[in-house]
View 1: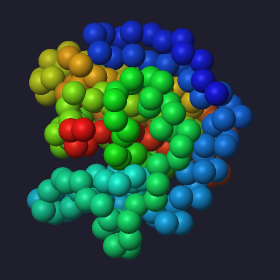
View 2: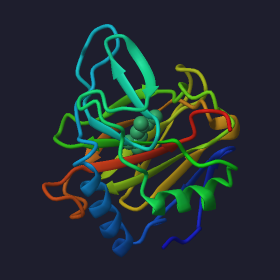
View 3: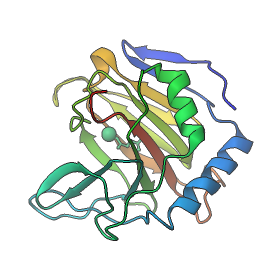
Length: 209
Ligand code: SIN
Ligand code: FE2
């Protein structure tokens, strides 16, 4: 399914261009769409202000990351339906094993769905996971996007690069708490998703094994 060519962007950050080939992307997007029945997309709001996110989200796995007026947290059930999250597709667990080598499976696959010209994600850290020794594995499907990566403080230089459908990205080790975000989408750069848009799948280990 995957080829393991990679670019090391900085210590702890690796990009795998074309990690998932076109046929496997089709299979994966079909599996993900089927899981939206049990774990439907919804639009979270920011802690405090209640401002809606620019993306829709859902999760798969035993723990899902959620945001609402009271804060960010992981929980075992969907905040809208109250149901357990759908199971993480096995192909993603295989990729996690091959790419991270982490001795325990991911507990959360966060799904970000970017659609429309307002879809983006501000610079943030992934820091709600006690298992900060595990890297974050991120996969891109659909339209290309401009990803911005900084250091471990909000201020300071950032670098931007384009993520295309099928690309993988890992950040871990000294880069685990790097600030990152999506500045913009490049519309109509992929036909993978009906109606256009981009799906990002972020795999994380939450608890220390
Ligand atoms: C995220 O950091 O949660 C999403 C990043 C991306 O969409 O590539
Ligand atoms: Fe993130």
